[in-house]
Image: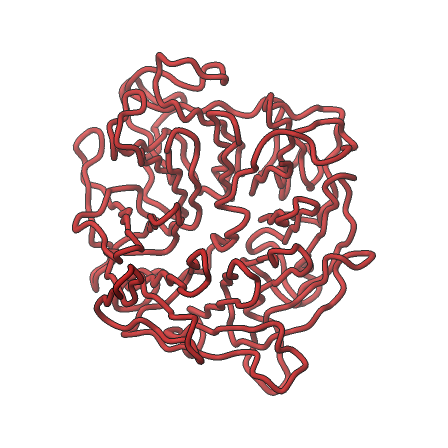
Length: 486
């Protein structure tokens, strides 16, 4: 059993949305019109903070000092209006109890490239979401102390106050770990996979704070599923919940619907029922599921299958060795159907996913089964693999990769940051954390050694279909990466 206590994949806005272009949204202190922030948690040679990278040239100007963001900045969330970047302390580098470093929550003003507020959280968080109007941040803190109740709360912070970060409320939910928000910002779904009731979803109505109406309603799901993530239909009438299953200590991985039009909301239950006109409710079982990405009516779900004896899905490596593997399931939410055979990807706990250019789906995991070279550089022809998989979602080949093909690049380490770069065939990947420290890699999504790519030497001929380059002039222990401009 693998318990999902690894850094957040639950930054839905930050992980799945690329910026809409490279034009400037206002004057920048650095003078760079299209910027990426890279969180540097700790380094022997540079200060902790947010590095600024020119997302058009992939260069970090050495004259720019890091933006202060606490003692060990980790995951980041960019607000929908792109005016602020929210930063929390990197995984396992904080404690609410002195003398350990405090769990910090920094609010960065993007235009000024400066820290507007540096707050202390009541515990570590791996899930931060922002209201669609960018006015409120919701921070899940599973260990937050609550009077006369089990620990766990959603902390609310106002982002429009001066300075930003004023306390806007607290919603008590024991062991709350992951959050999702609907398109209108009226409902939140909260998940407590390690709580006393891990098979229920807490439906939160923030506007009911301070009224006699219930703020939290619990919806029980079918079986023993361990819900961890959710997406909403465009009209917010249906929520699609990813249930993790045996990988997280449950019984069955699945995608289960919640009907948000009823009061209280209603779980889909077993089976699938479709109404005339096309709305389908119910549950579709999957081999595994710990992270997903919704693209139109297609829901990509990655995870590692488990049985009572451990990992239950094997695959063959490049040199014929038997490996543990994860699976990628592709669910049509318009009919709630999924393929009968999963696509083999790396194993591990998957908690990063993003769609790059040319239909290339990047899937990041942690604690995967790696193939580490015996020497550096590796012997010619030897296989090296880490925790990143790239899946070709197109029905046509991209370079040498066939439709539905998977590439596992030769880079070792956990994947903690994914950011597609808009209007370019490029994806930034932070991989390697915590040891020896994450590096910022630049991947070209053309995936063809002979194709033109704006990244010099980004691609090499076989045996490695994809060989990323390091971002130039970047030295540190990086954790996350986000573009901050439109």
